[in-house]
Length: 440
Image (cartoon, rainbow, N blue to C red; front, top):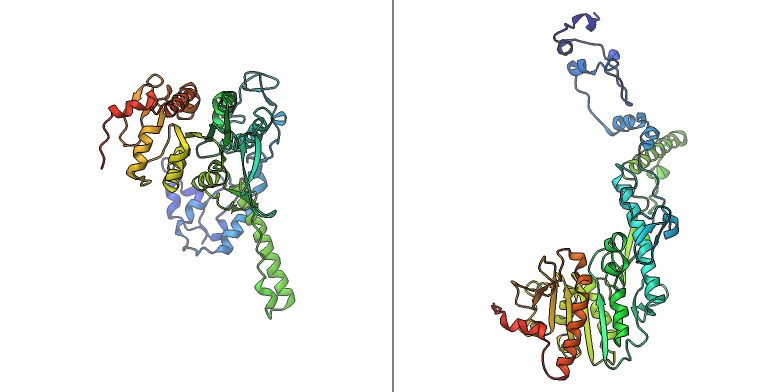
């Protein structure tokens, strides 16, 4: 007997009476695209026997979803310009990135409620900025781009560093610049500063130009360029139906269903994760597969071979950790050649890196770490580690510490050079004698 469920509803309990109703299966309506409440009668299906779920059923449900409609609501294509002009941005005479037409600073939220798309746009602009800085290093700073490894074959992955013409021949002074971790590359301190502030605060260019003016040779490291990315080769799996004894008609039908299912799944995957355009693999660069390896390689093949009597390091954030690792691996050589090291908000840790007592003593006498702090520039800051003196960089923003301590760093190097000549230590490091470090 068929029951008309519509007459069993009372106004005060409109839907609850449907629970006990017995409805023939053909009366239960499902709509994968979504329907109005008047069309759905699935509330009454709780009395139906449970149905087993299989991939066949789920794929059938997937086939009913109108993916074209969903894709219309998806983010725009990830197709961005490859030049600053294409983005309609340019650097003005102050080194600030501004929109060509409006003169406004860069806007991250170019499209509302599309954070991933905005992030990808920002990253695409960042890659253009990286190439732009490389051009400035060569054209404005007159540095040479040197490929590494020095004995690399034509086909193997390669990286590069930048050097001044006299980097290896300058008999007096050599300055080595090391940036931190992340997306930054040679010549940069912070991409965020380049885009949102200016070139002076975000790049190493002011350091390079002043160093050259004061008679330094210059080497710019590139510690984050550790690998190249290539598209992962596709592995073709031979269909098991090729060797089957099934009739050709049945095999073709199965292959057709399989292809259609794969097509729907791929299309759905592209909707679910549109950023995954290609599957990439990483090919690491020989002897430069990490910032630490890179620092040691450049030391062995360039810095150690230089003629400079005084070598000076400026290392920001993770660059400080890379320098400490270099010193652990090449302690005697570093001590004999390096005069002073300026760290800016370095993340090194002499305990975790197992730096020996002799290294810690050398760092106390020859290094200074300008850390993020709200205190005025060069104000002494207490340290929990027995390594080098810590002073304020005059800013509490990590990425700005190199730029804000810029004048103090050059003063520190000048004093260190003069002190070495007169067998005295620079005034800035003498404060370390007033700080008692407990040797564990």
